[in-house]
Image (cartoon, rainbow, N blue to C red):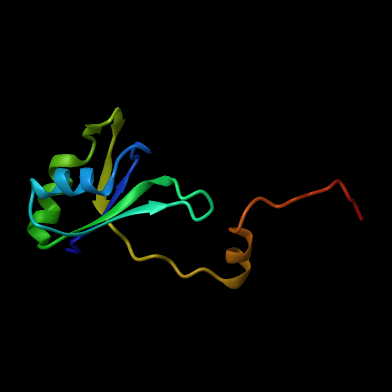
Length: 104
C-alpha cells in the first residue's frame, strides 16, 4: 500500500500543523502538503499527507475517513498518481473561457 494519503473536504481554516497533529496520532508523518490555489494563495480544500509506514497510512484511513474536523467530514484515502494531461486539456484548465458574444 502507498503511504501517501489524499485528504479532502478540508475547511479552509485547516493548517498543515493541524493535519500533522491529527495524522501523527496514527503513525509517524513524513510530509504534509496543503494544496493552495496558485492565483489567490488560499487553501483549495485538500491536502496530501505522507505516512512513514503503510500500517500508519491504513490506520489513519480507518480512523479519520468520515471524521468531522472543523465542521467538515473528511475524505481520507490512498493517493492515486496524477494522470497525465494532454496539451489540449491543460490549456483549458487555466481559467474560465471568455466568450465576448462574438458569433462567427
